[in-house]
Image 1: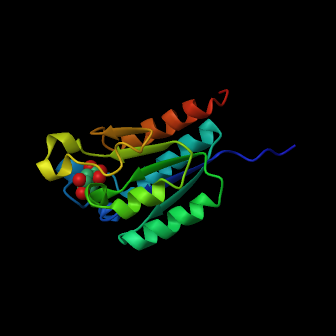
Image 2: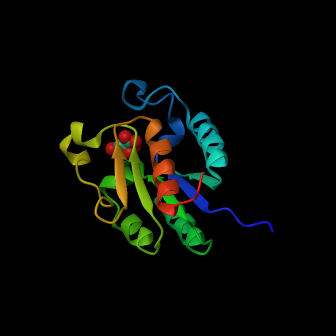
Length: 152
Ligand code: DQA
């Protein structure tokens, strides 16, 4: 029998399409496409189905979360970019979901300007990974895999 794989969704917010070009000293030299390519390989190895989205528009991200709500998600990995610090609407949308939610930041937001120290998601996310560069997405994927207790 062909059993459906658990579905993990990776959501990236504003300006993250510019990774690789954008402040590389802060965010690293890898582009989002390459990060996602590596994540897709890792997900395959873990037996997870993975879906990627990125938008520079808050409403588009909210609409995507509403769609994901209908798709039986097993886990969410989200780097909301600057929306982390401002968006009550994003927080409210994520509250729809009952699966693990991992908040990822490439940079360590707590080492940066004070306005980045506050995350609207920190207390509703399952956990937060901040400061590990693109490896944070892999840590998040592994964390979700562990939480799902899939035998390897
Ligand atoms: C970020 C940190 C945010 O403060 C910033 O606005 C971003 C990227 C990170 O990945 O380190 O766009 O989420």
